[in-house]
Image (cartoon, rainbow, N blue to C red; front, side, top):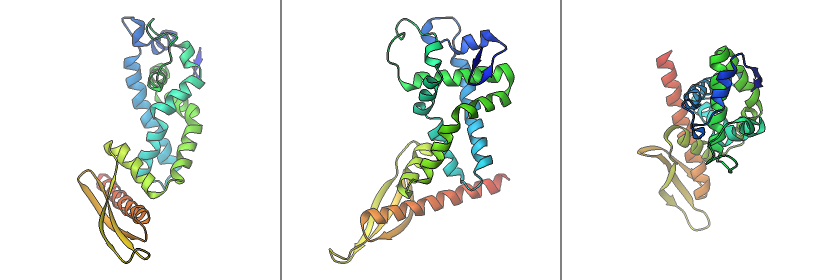
Length: 224
């Protein structure tokens, strides 16, 4: 049988991948989900590293988080028909389930591919089924303004949102200038001027991104 573009040799392994914990079986797909999650992260990260050499570590983190999000994986799982082949318990069968359930199902099947044929097969399956989401995530990131990019970086790395604080302002009501600073948690970044608060926030976000990308580059140099 074929799923995610992979023809399984071990059908028992595939059956296990499609068995949700709610089915009540002694064995379910949770351990395979763990493997699939790890394989998926590596496959997408390696692909971004290889095909987009201009992306910084922070940008790759943001794009990867968009690709492997519960929403994206859940949608792909349903498009592939995994929801129709999975075995759920009576309490879940026939109900409208959250995207996370189907995202976990996708990861479990990918974990089964890994055990059935190795990482290269799992990598190929992940990239073949997520090619469009990867391209969309790259395009979406490219169209983001600095504030959106900083927000995604902050959420991906620290599970929090950046804040912006007014440092000072000068001028009359019709010719004012604002000095803003971006802050993520306890970390404050360089200030930036703008003719409006929103413009100053955008430049402050840009300054923060420069600092974060420089720090990531330094870490890469140290580990090289």
